[in-house]
Image (cartoon, rainbow, N blue to C red; front, side, top):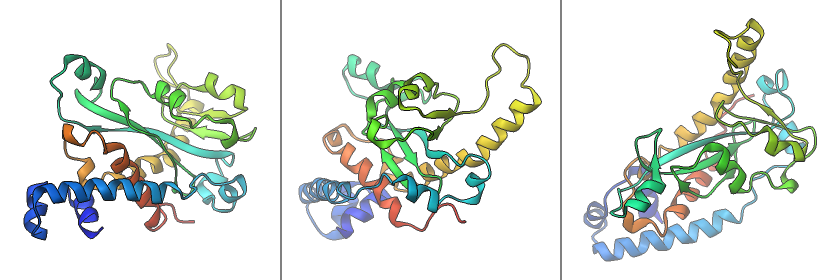
Length: 243
């Protein structure tokens, strides 16, 4: 387990791990896969979606004063993957935002900064909206009427939230205007000041350097497990948002 956590945090290559721990490269590979799967099931059995009462009791003042109905703040992030030889696969994974082949996932956090939702990895070519519709975060049992969700401009998902009775809070759009009205500027700044916490959480996840390196194709079978383990381990660190 120590070897797996060292690899996850430092992103060492398997040859270097074999030298550090005095083991064969094939043994290293087998241990990494085994512990990826084991921790995925162990940590995955811990419920991370909080109740409404838990959200309210742990809500920081910055949210209570501005967006007290917030249940979740969401954002997508991408990790680089080795370029596959298949042109069809390349096209599916290619991200125009990153100009590289990537995997893309959605992360949701509570107002207090705890990770409350982690999607599986999707091809980098998918839009934010499409990932929201596929990943399961819109399951009716997760939401109550009157809740709100906070996101960036790319998440134009209000029509997906309407059946749940959930409101979407995103920064204002120009909508053909040369510049935003004063009210829209204040509104957008207020959202940005609290939405930034989801970006801080993603930066915390990316401190596991194995996710910052180009994922080799031979790890495709376990990359989802590795991704979720890295995300869930972040909930064992000190809270992100202080009261």
